[in-house]
Image: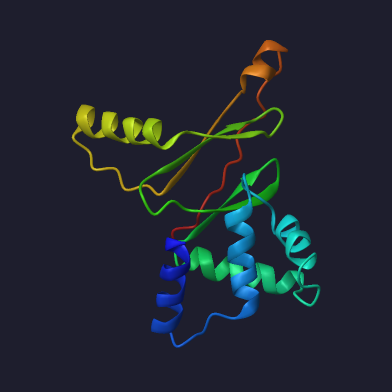
Length: 156
């Protein structure tokens, strides 16, 4: 696991160590086939090691985000987490009606970034991008997108 090596190196650089709990969280993220909530991770880990509590999972996720190895984003009011690719941008399509998330294949993600660079001469610096809209199933059912979640950051 390339991200495990990156995690170990960064922990060592900061004078921290790879604990069993951190290893379990990282392993559970690797095994997840789609973005997961902290609670889902905790349930998965508790099956192996019941002494890992939810607050430890949240702290580890925070550290992994700080190290830019994990990203978290809102999906239908719940934060979902996933490992970031160490090999380029990671794009998701988020249905604003049903909340389903679909990952964009890496080749398509690279094509999207390349098209922006070519058209605008802009060097795109994204690790992860969530594109809101309506999935095919909801469109076929005539569903309407909920207004996008907007977060304002106070520049002060």
